[in-house]
Length: 521
Image 1 (cartoon, rainbow, N blue to C red):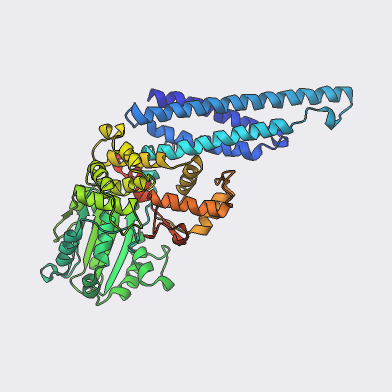
Image 2 (cartoon, one colour; image 1 turned 90 degrees about the horizontal axis):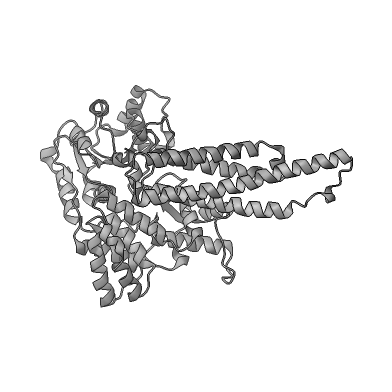
């Protein structure tokens, strides 16, 4: 708490100075309006993360982050002091010329060198703040206003039913079969929908498991209609009904302006005399009344008996509230062999030949540190993909980080941080940080993303590379995909074959813990 108070005070002081300077006509004349505005916005963003520092245990990575912020804050203060001095000096200089009634522009100090120097310094500080903002997210610090309630700032996650090339369900075959058998078993058929809950900690692959079930051939044959709705933190009954309708009749879906009765009328027209499977993914609602209201809406539909609902959640309480008739699926952890299978697929994406025995031996030892969590295995596999030699793998295996690796979801956060640190250049880290502006599981054309990076000045060619910005941008998307930031990466490691459509998995791979109630405090 003390650290947060001290640094917040420092940032507020610098922010006040930036606002003061930005309003002065000399700052506008010198051409620093845009730079100062960007610095102000960056400081404001960082200030919001400081609110979360008080909720975190002090020491370790959090304390290191606070120290880095203090250093950047001092650098910003020094630059602003220098800028303020120059503004005052030039004002006095102009006043002296006015007294002499001889105002010759060329007699004044040429501001060009000063402008270039200051622009470079402010740009460097802004880059540091972007990095700190991204690092704060990876450490579980959640940006929020001082007076905001913790959960109110969680982004709504977006998921869909499509299985990407890299979303192979390793070690879950028996679970998928068991769920499909249960959903299609006639003994669970009744007039109103029966509900199954898939429960497990973040990173175990609940969404991927639900996708696998959703896309099974037997499910296609048994249910006339399948619907996928990502609920996330906004559990609004009318919004859920609307999302269902958007899938069933996208060309002529109603809007939220329609009342619930109208939504149910449209929904009934689409589901009448049909057996349906509804997936409600990523549910956080623990209010039993809200769930009861939603189920009452389903009871009013004239669908065929035997419809089923699957709810995926981390919360046992959510599962208890929602499940009805069907047995709960408690998602367990993977074996070391299964984790190595995931890691191997990431580390050697285009290798169909036998992998060298030395890599196998070292990889299995590293796989023991996954803790049975598929998400950790994916990220570690992405890190190993960037390490080409036995020596590099061995050094990684013997790293001191493994001795301090916690259990559960804290393990995931530290491994994600490790993967972020493994990104090979500051430019690549800034490209990743920029992607955090998009909604989770966002889809975008690769070329569009590269253009956005270029517009922000995030791509920096090496002097001896001879590559244009587009090529550097494409290479950056490939490297981020190898580290698990994007899904949809083809099995081939050739950059030219990387798919044009990129789907962000920031929510699941990099920012997933930001939506956890434990992290939210």
